[in-house]
Image (cartoon, rainbow, N blue to C red; front, side, top):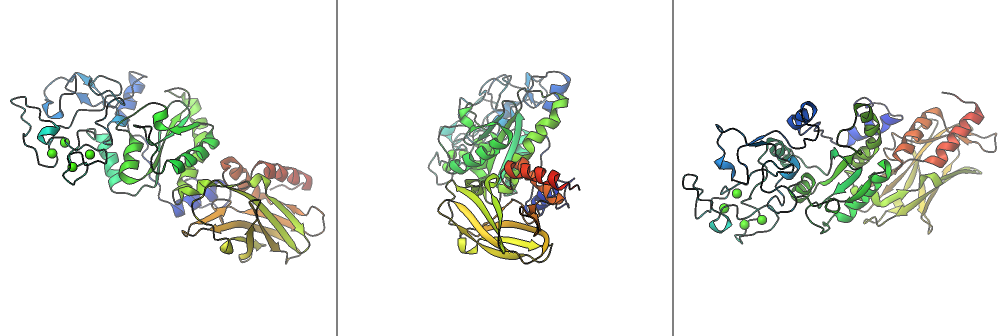
Length: 434
Ligand SMILES: [Ca+2]
Ligand SMILES: [Ca+2]
Ligand SMILES: [Ca+2]
Ligand SMILES: [Ca+2]
């Protein structure tokens, strides 16, 4: 994004558009000490390297800093608050376990305890005494009118505390967390087979991203149950549509493979950033490889097939347009109609003798969302040169080819394979070079 920002052709159009129109936050590595340990000592290590002073699920306050740690590490992705108290999705008891969720809270967060925690006399009050009586599950467990006011655990590690602060202070619409391995894309919930309220659109978005990198898309729990997990917390608490990408086919991708995995997963990431404004856009599919552009007398006729897989908002077709310009001049608009066959069609008047035509499709829905095809328009454009003296008078200019090859790669927008091939053959036929 940073390398390409400022350019309006090729990859640059996506980078420029996304950085101008979205806020993107990167957490380069959450488990820094665990990763270092994996590099230096134990390639199979997955937790952080926090010292554990208790063998089992002894409450946190019993930890004595002078003691020698009995084990190391909390599984960061079991230490988020949502459903942390549930069993079956983490190592609940033994601190040495590879998916250890962290120590129990055993703290009266809301100050209503009947029996206060008593470390000297070994009294471990529980929910009945008003300690940890209302864990993070969206339910008012003790019926006091407050929800989740006295959690039982979670957010004991510095890493999850930092992520909670990030979530509490921003409004993330979408998120990706990268893990290894299995070539999967997962979304909430991870702790239950119940489908969340936004499950259908999360599945649609996840499916579209999976088409781009060839991974298998599924609700997280379908892999295995997890509790206290990142995406569940971000969705439950902030409504974020979060995805776990399980990268590659091994925990430890060889250095020489990193660039390939990065390339493979770039387009899904760009697509999710793009979709953050209107995730439902994934319900619309422009079948750009079947788009036709033909000269018909004094007009250029454009037909773009569109599949509507349940887009929940009405499209305001009276405001739909082909936005076009000749020879880089001022933008003008031509109307678009939606046929019964799902084809969007419009006609652009030919009012030049010869020259370059740029155009894109712009749709609006009744929520005020604007949808363009190709994505990122008008930074990425479909361009034609028009020569009036030949029968097949349309061919692509060089800058357009860069755009086309990129949109071919991203495959959700722009014109794809069929047209990209015709670009190449046209280019070779015309003997053009850039
Ligand atoms: Ca309490
Ligand atoms: Ca508590
Ligand atoms: Ca309560
Ligand atoms: Ca609760």
